Length: 417
RNA sequence: GGAGGAGUGCCCGAGUGGUUAAAGGGGACGGGCUGUAAACCCGUUGGCUACGCCUACGUUGGUUCAAAUCCAACCUCCUCCA
Image (cartoon, rainbow, N blue to C red; front, side, top):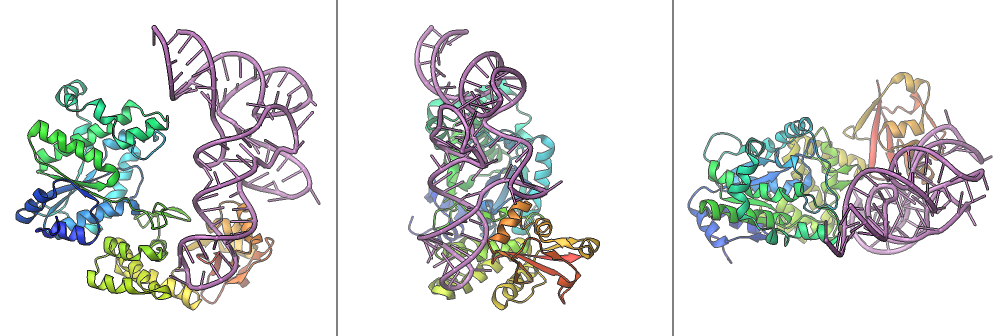
């Protein structure tokens, strides 16, 4: 327990991924002597994964780096059911088209973090719709139903919470955990998968799968979970002013992604560096020693490294450069998010309110007004004090754009075409 | 099937005929302080062609000069009984 023999568990431990692990001695022994196949499941409720999923992705990456085989399980089948964990309300069910679209969006992220192929440690991607949709209800119930007791499922945190709050938990959702258990069994049979990883909220579901495997196939399966990712001040991670922190470039620009990491709280820097970058541990320890404003250097490194992993080195450096110009030098940075407006509109005089809404800096004219009243709006870094201001050709700077800002952090370049 | 209770803004939660775009809290956003951090302080938080207008308190109708508030039906959920 104090020291692992296998590279895999040692790295996971050192970097702070492990929260709970079932039968770690046995898993350690296996990981030390042969290739372990492990999986993490991802729901496809949106067209992109977000930073909340990053931990799972990174675990698979570490697994592969230490010589094992990752399986990405896409929940094409389970998404049709909906995971009740941590939710108060029943989730809206998605239709098949939406799910297929989402899967396509999610797929591209993994290729940046994992190596896919047919080799022994190459990653593979599977979709549980492939077996779940084929199940025959009566047959499934007879084969697997006896292995689950309601008594036990009632003790699960996800179930208890719902019941305690007197929120409905439908039979449909109740089945989610059974399907997840079955997934594990199926992956063990098809791919020899013996380990499921996930967030700590998945512990119960994973254990369910382990038990099912043991009862049905006498398989020896393992669970490994990470602590749920929250900031030190307790907020759940993954929100920016604009919403979720998506991993797909078309849903969140590399610049905004970089900013997300740059704004990490002081007390999270070390932890995040370990989890989300691949800098050597010694280097991280040095970085952690920085205090006060110097810690910003560590944050920048975190931002650039994390951004490079998701969007590539080039985009990350670009984002870093843009931030440097915008925040430290106060100069115009061409890398800021750019919104195109028609040159004709501009010639006729574009109202500031409309401009703010068009730029996505406000969701309505009223909100734009409030921001102006609150003194938050700047045009080319000059405070705008009236909502009646009209933007025109004169406002275009030498760089050929108009810079609009709300607050200190949100900037957009307007480009006339 | 019977009896009772509940459905309010992003979320939680007050409000039982007009002064309610709806207390309070959380969150979010903006300002101040700073280091693009945290904590703290202040402000904002439905929309619009804006001293007025429109939309909004589960849904649809009704009573009334006037309804989130009263009535009816319906939908959904909870609790107890069968």
